Length: 182
Image 1 (cartoon, rainbow, N blue to C red):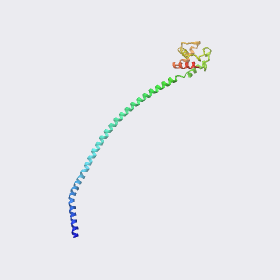
Image 2: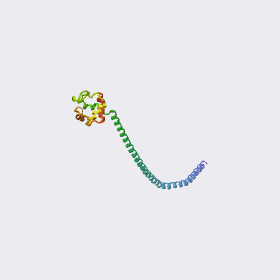
Image 3: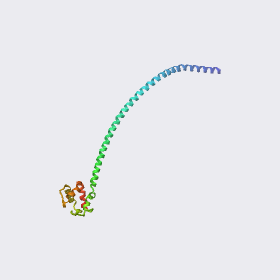
Image 4: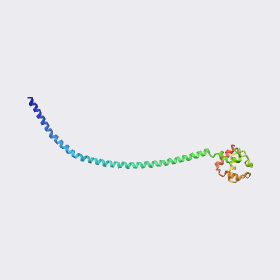
């Protein structure tokens, strides 16, 4: 009886396996058809993705070019404004330094020291008065007169005109202030 049971089980198994093959066969056939259709679908998808990627790439390139141009224009404008501001600051600094330091009266007096002495207490060529200690305003007036050729004290007008011809008003003020302090 055992043999009969075993044979029955084997027969039932074969029947069940045989029934399963017919449905598996249909599935295998559908899978085979899908395999044939799959490469064509994959190619279409690849082409669509490639086209979209090209479109996106072109759009990004256009936007990047526009943004680069805008940034370059803004940067150029900022550089120009910075240059102008720096130039203005440099000009003001130069003016401030010149105003603060002004001409050096002592250095300007070096031309005068040859005749008037290093301390300004020598009568120039034995003809002029001692200039050390005179009021700055009086000295300015005299130097301006010599420069203009309208002053000729002790016949020294021509000599003095040559000495002070290159002095600016600021130079005259500086040297007069220095001499008055001697």
